[in-house]
Amino acid sequence: EPEVTQTPSHQVTQMGQEVILRCVPISNHLYFYWYRQILGQKVEFLVSFYNNEISEKSEIFDDQFSVERPDGSNFTLKIRSTKLEDSAMYFCASRLSGEQFFGPGTRLTVL
Amino acid sequence: AQTVTQSQPEMSVQEAETVTLSCTYDTSESDYYLFWYKQPPSRQMILVIRQEAYKQQNATENRFSVNFQKAAKSFSLKISDSQLGDAAMYFCAYRSTNAGKSTFGDGTTLTVKP
View (tube, rainbow over the protein chains, first blue to last red):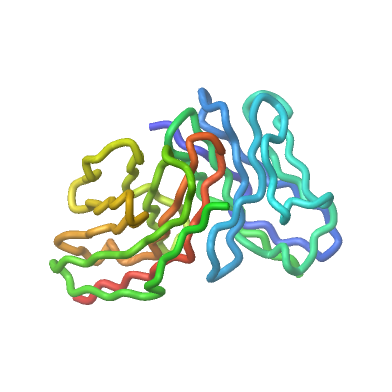
């Protein structure tokens, strides 16, 4: 069964460093998303991406964040200068229609 | 903006018994999707069940069923014959058919007692 994959599973970085989180959505899906979940809290929407552009973004998704689909298979989330409060689980999701399929998540720890 | 409320931060159930998790939502739209996701300690988000708002029939997936009350904007999850492996955090989520994003509730932590 096709699934969304994410790498790395755990990323540790120093405050101020750039990180890139990678996702491979399900191959025939058209809509792509990033969510984050701070430990013990709810899942929050960051950004949605369709037809090679951002279709919606939340107030969390400020200028420090960017997304890209560089090669038609990968979908990346870049955080330019990480802050302590960026420590969270980051989930990628994709859909064709109906429900979103979530990846296993990347745990980002900012020290 | 849509909101999703899960009023039970924690629930517990005895193995083999039945438990119901509550969820209410607020929307002005008539067509949308509702979901229940399970998040075990691994923190992976696993889809448990989905309901399209235009369908009157409540969705069922094996031991999992929902009670969808559109007028009341209520979407509860019933787990029958609870098993130890059902222990997890459960999130209720709403997605408009127009907008792509999902809006999640705060979650309910389910404990299953042997």
